[in-house]
Structures are given as structure tokens and as C-alpha cells.
Image (cartoon, rainbow, N blue to C red; front, side, top):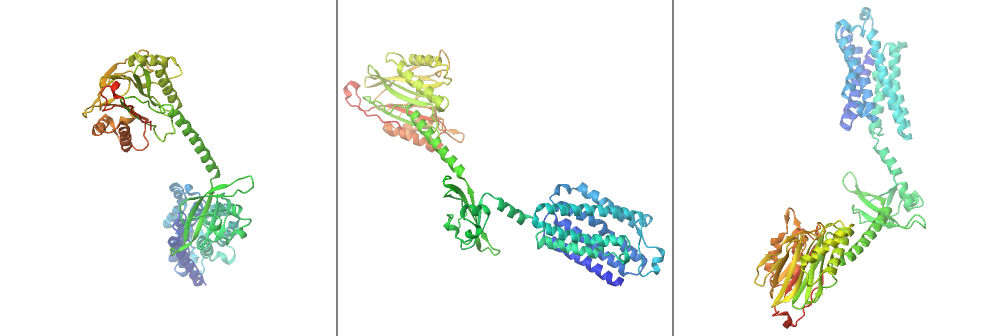
Length: 605
């Protein structure tokens, strides 16, 4: 009889070892190692107990009985560790906890290994040598180990079953099955330790644990007890507000979540089997994001807009198996986008109208002078800049010209630009020096306490003189203009002064020069020379070189060349506003009074 039970126990141990190997081979997750340790503990318990039953020598029997406690003591901590990991309490499984759980098993096996303490745990009585079925005498330490093991097993089992019961209704049957499987070895062990009937002779606990191990592994791999992904995915899909469709390889709908049913059909049954292409536009399986507009759910709702995401499905061999299509509603986002676009369009229109006030609609005709101008706002043109320019008749065969740059951008900068331009027009006088006129403009702007921006500008006068034109101008904190002579010589001209609207008494100087036939004066804002590419700027040298290499180019074409060059250097959208004004003395002028030829100027860009 003992030989029969020995074979059963050894077989149970081998079965658990096989299950442990299977778990280690099939599952590489956080709870896999603890389950494998649990199965190995039972396997060792069964094999050692089988050997204990099989041998007749009491000393050898006692030795195998002691060795089985390596598995007996290891099983409860392994079971608790497995439960903690499975129920999402990984943070509890620390090195400190594992060390605490190992204290009692280590002490038990140390006591069994030492002759002085061995009998405190278990021993065979002297009469065991003559008894074919000897019973083991439990020492006081055994009762402590038994209480410890039962407590750990109880806590782990209750925690496991309670956690499963809270997960979902579909898990409760599995929890009941597992509870029953866990109670079988409990019952066998309690009957053995309580010396009930013939259970007092044979400990069937290792064999009973075979049922628990099989249930655990079956639940792991066949019923996916530990793999919560399918249940979680199902719960998420059922509650998703996005419509999810699954199609077969022919584009027919084979599955849909409740949101998809509400969107497209009266019922799920009516939706299944329909071609998705008849309902949702696609790109023939393209996984790129589309956008589709569908009728609203009720008469007052209007249309609804969705992002459509296509994801191909493949089978195990990599062949196409169908498609997952997700419709995410973006109706409010689209409406907000349209409202934003309307606001931006209105802003661009207002900016364009304000920007138009910064330059004259057309430059005047001046006999003997060719005028050209270009104006480019920074960025995409939606924000009003602070650059402005103007050319106007002062009478007495004198014309005034101004080009300026107000600090900042937006409506406030445009207000200062307009105030500066029209104040200068009102105060300009053909008999006054440009610096005196600029000082009057400075006093006027400082008197407007709501204006808190400074302005740099070039203001000058232009009148016929001999065979050309006399130019007198002042620089109020502005970049010096560049003169291109008919012989190709290029030079910067002007004495730098103080910007407008900064100080009560600005330091301003007048510069006089003569434009002979073929000469031209190029006036510009800092958006031209300070355009950047990396750390480098376009710079005055590039402007001068382009003017020199294009000496025979008409002013209109020359202004276009400058704009093209700076855009190629910096990029299409400039970081700062750009204004250019070119005043060229015609080559056929031999005295303005006798020239008799009027040159039509160009309009600003």
C-alpha cells in the first residue's frame, strides 16, 4: 500500500515539475516566475514524500521527510507572491517582503538540519522501526509552522478570490472553480494533521495540489484567467464613444461596438454584413487618417464630422484578414476651426486695410525722377506692422519723402505709424530743413501721452538743381540710405540722429547730396539688412553689391531684385517688416526745366 501511495506522490511531483516547466516556457510575465516557484515547491514536496514512503530504513525515511519541508515551507510564500502580482499589487512584492516571508521557511529547515533542534519540528518514535506504517510525531515548532502556513495560504486565497469577484461577472465562475480546487489540498492537509481516520497515515496534500496546479495552468493558458487584456479590451470597446468597426477581407462589417451601431444602423444585426465602403469613405485600405462628414442623428443636429482611422489586420501568416476602422467625432473641433479661420480672415482683412494706410496708393509723378517702392509685412501678413513710407508734393517744385519704422507690431504700432506719417505731412514745409520738421513731429508725438512707442525715420526733401536733383534729409535713429552713382560707386550717406518720440530735444542732423543723371538713392527699413539666416544677417554689404551689379536696372526692377534676394536669404516669411523706397534720377535729364518728360512711378507691392 505504501508503495502505491509513494508512486502516486512521485507522479504528482513529476506532474508539477512538468507544469512548472510549461509555465516557464509559455509565459514571460510578472506572475509567471512566482507560479513556477509554486509548482516547483509542490513538485519537490511530492517527490520527497514519495521517497519517504518508499524506503524502509527509518534514518533514510526521516531524511527524506525532512527534505520535503523545502517544498512545504516554500509553497505558502510562493502562493502569496503569485496572488499579489496577479491582483495588481506588484509594488507590495519587494525584497523586504520576500525576506520576511522566507524567515519561517529558513528557520524550519535549519532546525531540521541541526540534530539539537530536529525533534522540535518532527521525529519518528523508537517503535517506528517495527511499524510498517509509522506515524510522525510533531514537535512544538511544527505547530508554529503549520499556523504560519495556514495563515499565509488563507490570506492569499481570500485576496485572490475576492479580487477576481470584483473584476467582472464572467470571472466569478472561474473564481468558484479555483476556490474549490484550492480547498481540496486544504482539506487533505487538515485531515492529515488532525489525525482523522486513515488520513492520519498518508498525507495526500501533494497529490491534491495537482488539481490546483492543473486548474491554475488551465486558467492561465486555455481560459486566459491571468490575461486580463481580452476582458479589458472588450469593456473598453463596449464603453467607447468612438465608433469601431471590424471588417473582413472583402470589406463587409463583421463586428461593431455599440457606438458604431448607434451611428450607422438601427441594430447590430442590421449593420453586420453591410459593406463599410457604402457607409464610411475609405482609401482602399489606406491606414492614413481621413475625414468624413455624415448626417446628424436628428433633424436639428446638422452634419457630424469624424476622423476615420484605418488599420489593417493580418493573420498568423501575414496575409490580409480585414480592417479595423475607428470613427472619432471631431464636429466641435471642425466648427471651432472654421470659427478660428473666420476670425483669422477678418484679422487679415483688417490688417490689410490698416497696412494699406501705411503706404500711399500710388507714388506721385515727378519729372526727372523715377520712383519705386516695395512693402512686405512680416510673417504671413496677418499682423499689422509698423513700417511706413510716403512721397508727397510740398509745392515750390519741392517734394517730401519719408520712410519710417515704429517699434513693435499690431494695432498700436499702426496707430503710431499713421500718426507719424500724417503729422509729418501736416508740418512739412518746403522752406524748412528736414531736421526742423522732424523736431516738430517729435514734439507733437510726445504730447500725445497715450503713444508709448518710438519711431525711426528718414525724412528728406527733393528739388531740381542744375542737371539733377538736390536732396536734403535727416536720419532720426534710422539706418543710413545708400547712394548708387551712375559710374557704379556705392556709398552710405547721412549722419545718424535720435529716434522720434524718445526725448524732448532729439539730436538731429541734415545731410545734403546731389543726384546726377543715372544716380539713385535707396532708402530702406532694417527689415532689409537685418534679415537673418542662422546667425548671419543680410547686411549692408549685400545690398550695396546687388545695387552695384544692377546699376543699369530700372528702379522698379531693382526694388523687386532686393526683395527676392532677401527672401531667398531668409525665407519666404520675413521676421520683420520690410519697406524700400528708391529715388532714381533719370539719365536723360539735362536740367529739369528743359527735360519735358514725365516718368510714371511704380505702385507699391
